[in-house]
Image (cartoon, rainbow, N blue to C red):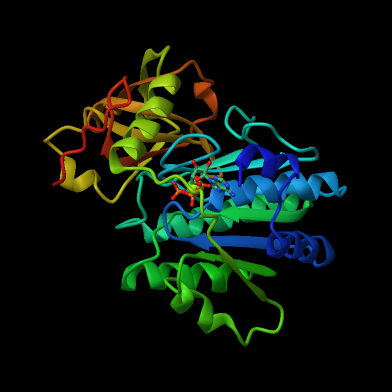
Length: 303
Ligand SMILES: Nc1ncnc2c1ncn2[C@@H]1O[C@H](COP(=O)(O)OP(=O)(O)OP(=O)(O)O)[C@@H](O)[C@H]1O
Ligand SMILES: [Mg+2]
């Protein structure tokens, strides 16, 4: 099976067609779960393409903060489609939420709150259908709890599980008695390409490098801006240079990312590098928990 052909509507397997029909009939949130490299993002793209062709307006919530399709890693992005999109990157985002990490480990609340905030933002636009892509973080107790709470919070009309064998059965089963939720189990396409950890890292670097290609050094007074982070106290004195920061608006939606130069809480100033952006809207600056350089290399020192 060839992805391009699939996206053109050529060779869509029968059970995938049934899923598309089911979402078209019963509109609402469609949440896609699956381990890494199970075709979640490709399925999301296919759903958008086919459902738009059937006359729907479809929102995509990209809840994958590691291998993002929309926007940058560490963020949850929102885009809206009324026609079949070609590639999903370079799509104009409607909203974005900064999680601050490339994995939900240690950031469960930000992931959960972020995905809900972005899904609510999507609902306000009344798209009819909201497709939600997620990380491949499905193994272990922490992942189980995150996915359980995510499903409970988002209440998808369609819960879609992509699995090789039965590896996410434990995530799907607890929801089988919900009257307003259909569970769809899909097999993994044979031809799927696996990404190595190095490929995943270089995908992220490439996105960060492109984003930080043209930057300016900003120095800003902290009047009217709140720096928020549970790490602030821990880091104090050691400096935060190199840490990725989220430049957020008054509603805590993300306006852009920066790399911190210096935070001086005594003088009340902050300096960071970031692409050209309107600083006047920044009200909250969230300190992330990864360090990147201008080439997108992950420099994180794990404390
Ligand atoms: N139906 C398909 N036919 C052929 N190739 C596919 C199909 N679905 C996905 N692929 C390929 O397999 C790879 C993994 O797919 P995809 O990125 O959609 O998976 P994912 O579950 O979103 O992965 P990640 O864990 O990185 O988020 C991609 O290179 C994609 O092009
Ligand atoms: Mg993906």
